[in-house]
Amino acid sequence: MQVHHIGYLVKRIGDAEESLKVLGYSEERAAEYDPIRDAVLSFWVNGSTRVELVEPAAESPLRPLLARYKNSPYHICYIADDIEKEQQRLEQAGYVMFREPEKAPCLEGKSVVFLMSPGAGMVELVEASDPTGKEAE
Image (tube, rainbow, N blue to C red):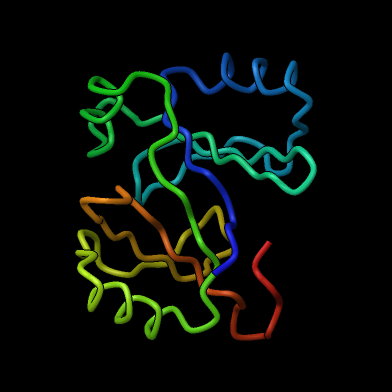
């Protein structure tokens, strides 16, 4: 599977965006609120590398991770040609789904699923294309 993005947990998205600019990143998708994750998200690119900045709201289930890890990468998202098949394959390899598959508003409503592995940590799968066949970006 190809990497779609690296999820980076941040306390203040504006500060993180300024730091990414210094590193040569440019904004791909402006910050917007994701009600499913109860967080503000933005996407930044530098060459073929995409970073998703995630600022959890006060009541977000991600907030405890921020308290524990501070500003840091916390998941890698992979593009899955067949998200259900890849999820099953990972589960057979010992990954555990901890969040039911759902649509991601900040990824044009594509389906995503989050899984955990003791060896690899948190991974996210995003479907490769929407119903019209458009490739995930």
